[in-house]
Length: 279
Image (cartoon, rainbow, N blue to C red):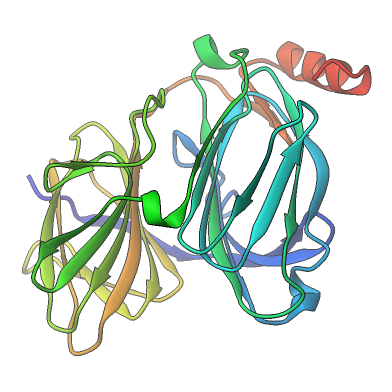
């Protein structure tokens, strides 16, 4: 059964870190979360004042952060000595697990900085796992011409027989960056039980089966009904979108700032551990 759009919304301007300006799409009063997704930000600016201060040292526990760069360069480092550089097209899937203190700082003083950050919840059984990174450079992300006029970058999951660059994630995610030439269409198979959304970041995309299509414009998020596929199409102009899905956890969420646990007691313990240098 093909999925349909059940809700559309736009993000809200916000700032985070040391003053980085962005648009928050998930994690707002309009959409607090979409299990297992806790937050989705799009950052896009060619004004260095909007991003130059970056994200200095800050903690995380109990979930995963996914940074996908479309343009620009960002360096990360943490309190365990890990470092890495994210350039155009690259992905970092960081599992914070039991805790980490890290930073993400721009490695440019001008030019376009553009990308997404997604927060993915961890099941209770994995919240205190050891932290780990999956850093994948742009040229290592699998790309495939799904049709003659649709190209996919496969960050996680499998599409057209090609597996994504990110593996071994508890929520079994799919994360596709899809590029449509004008007039193109595509039917994308999806795990039937996953919660799935589409976020259009270029052009306008028609989402859903013929006769019940919804028009999703640039900057809009569309939440999809359950089903085993989604039909996507564009008109006279090209379109670009991310298609993201994950297995819902259906677990209680105790959340405050950079910590996401299952109970208030676990949340208090996370703050205590951070204050006492145990992350």
